[in-house]
Amino acid sequence: MSETTPPLYIYATECDWVCAFDKHDALNQWCKAIGETADGYDPDDWERVPDDKSLSFWCDAEGNIAEPEETGNTPIKKTAREWVEKCGRGYLGSTEY
Image (cartoon, rainbow, N blue to C red; front, top):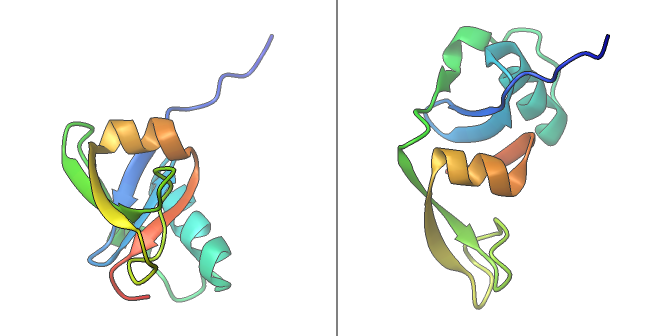
């Protein structure tokens, strides 16, 4: 019998966004991206973003999420579900760094 992979969603705090399976996975993906451990952080700080919510991220010419300061990057708006499908599991971005 094969195992099925749970669906991915975007989870967010006040300033960070990740694509993850659930709140615990969201915290782990964030920790992995910034080099932190989960100690002292609460997975309940992560809220699932509705699939139809519009989100804008700064992107490079190929449409990949990138730094806003880099020349040629522009904000791109997609629904949360579209970002999940484009980016897959992992860290998406932050308003802080």
